[in-house]
Length: 471
Image (cartoon, rainbow, N blue to C red):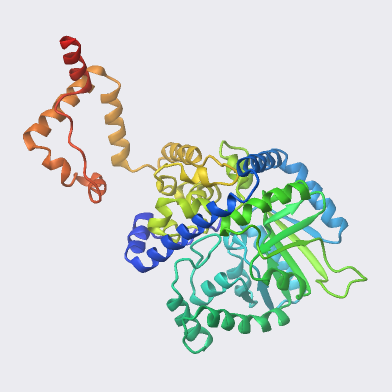
């Protein structure tokens, strides 16, 4: 499993996040800016809706025939000289990478950005074996130096201000303090240059694997992906088993949407296709290339009514538009995967009991579905998971009792009318003031930020009957 980042209860994490308004402002403004750019650039496609429809069809077809395309990918990568390893869970995935690192005598590892390596806690496993690990994506590098975790799947340190980053570089790297962005970039570049040249192993994620060619596709804006795959003598790519497309034509459709949805670019600066290790007649490139294909709960999703979440291309658009994510930030979710997609993925991969609160961390406004480039129906998936939390007894006792009481009233016309009359009577006796104050117990969370409207003095049925008599 391994995707949980905290044992602290969800509400405590949210309360802790709300105590840092500067970080929340940085997250909200960053997410909003990314989404505004996404909307502008998406319109540069000749027919954005048709492209999104086609992308959804490709993802649906691929996931429906996942076994076929994974087998085809393995055959073609093996023919190219690469090696494929299959991991049922996080433990197996970590062990496979550790075995490779031990066999080749790796002492230093350079990593490109990879959410699945965060998911399986790969860095900690390598470091426990005495292997030095360096994140080379700028955001991941900053988070690593700060002893922090990514708060966004595309922009790992969206929650940090440039002043905070300047302090981190001063304290951890011994650099003179600066909060000038070009200077901060230069400090990171100088530090990482030597890492690229001395690393024994490069580890990357995989944005997409291409079945027909046995290639993996990496998209970055910093060029670190190419350095990590080309300079070390061993390259290991770790991919979730769903991150595959059938053909290069299918890949081109995904690339048209990925950068537009993620960072508001028509295409990322570096789009690399890695086809295998260095060939005998080539001077540069790794001597070995390994791809570790990770299940870690994805097969369970595939066999359930939540399989649609496997269509996700990890663009982060749903995070950027989500009012809940903007209000509480990524760390409050307590998972490698935050936001609407994380609220679905985390219970699947980490188990419902560990993440029972996340499906409820949504207003179900539908903005995530509208933003998703492959039109994943996230609100419906969240509702299905809410139902599952009830089945597994994860719903709070007061809420279960309240829903049972409501059902007893709502399913009986007589009881419903009586409750309406009592509510109206209570409103008259209090003048509606109690409802505009604080509701008792857990319901007080509602009136903390909004008014609870008083009951109408007359029910709809009473008003209808009066109207009918007048007519």
